[in-house]
Amino acid sequence: MEIRDRFYGPILKAKIEKPFVHLIFGARQTGKSTLVNSILPSETQIIDLSNPRERMRFAADPGLFIDICRSLRSEVGPSWVFVDEAQTVPSIFDAVQSLYDRDKERFRFILCGSSARRLRAQSANLLPGRSVRHLLHPLLTSEYAMETVVNASPRSSWPSFPWLGQGVSGAVSHTSKFPFRTLENRLIFGDLPGIALQEEDTDKADLLSTYVASYLEEEIRREATIRQWDAFVRFLKLAAVDSGNIVNFSSLSREAGVSLPTIKSYYQILEDMFVGFTVSAFSGSPHKSALTTPRFFFFDNGVRNAAADFPLVESSINVDSGRFFEHWVAGQLWSALSYTKVGTLLYYRTSDGAEVDFIVQTNHELIPIEVKWTDHPRQSDTRHLKTFIAEQSSRCTRGYLVSRCPYVLDLGNHITAIPWWML
Image 1 (cartoon, rainbow, N blue to C red):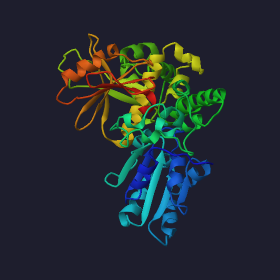
Image 2: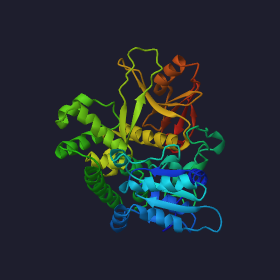
Image 3: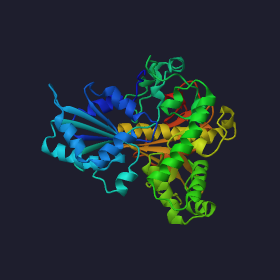
């Protein structure tokens, strides 16, 4: 299978050289195993616990893992051990600690999983003080071949974004990038690697529908103790339809027919399974009317659309294109900030109508971002950005408007309109 470039690949490759235990989490089908296998030495000992027979072997004999690792001999450098779906046999973590504490220079352990919930539920040893945690997300725009689009704007005009570290230079086409896809296609079908490699939209739709049925429903049912399964299935669809909005726990509680604490626990399950994330409200506003309730987003547009039972065809975005676009931008920002760790993603809204879609908060500044489904952004689109910059002048000196414009545009008042593919 051809290995495709991933944004996090070079970062992960550099980090796993350090003598820690590396825990790599992320929702299923984000490409964790493929990425890890592409950067590990060829002599790595691989234990695949997604294989039921392997899982039963190691669950029945916890000492087997230690015996295998002790038998490893490396002529040069440490012995590498990769355990896939490690959360299915929590005793593996105790075995790793025993080996690591005896000789941390001898081994490099990489443990991969798609659920933090099972580990917590079983009080698994997450190796505090010994481990480094990594999260893998759906594809960023820089992971796609984008040459035909990038050439539309002179490279000298590209801004450099702290949440991408290297700016947008990663968007240049490369033979090992994922194949180019239109924005509309990505808004409907999302950015899971397996979806991105499908040529036919009907195949993408079928795979996403199966993902929701077999993973979001069946897998979660196995991972979590849910007494009212029919209520959770109702919640899942409601949460997907509402994804991107400020969470109204009371309304969802009434519609799903379960208590308020239960609704909150359902949201926590989605976060524990890495299929959703929360964007908190910006708390540094002088306005007493500023809202404090978080927004919740599914981790991928395609999975969200399938879970919401939206028609998986590109024409569906015509119903509410701005909301599809904003949801996708949230995922791109969240993923990039998770990888680079340069800031936090927030939003700002007041009860009297003032709002900023997203705020990237770094150690040094606030960067407000508005999202508009337009290819001709105007100064009138920047009203809320200008107000926010003025109110936060000590920490905020620039703002961005993400749109479908073909070029970078100066909209005045330190606000720049950028094409979606520069995000």
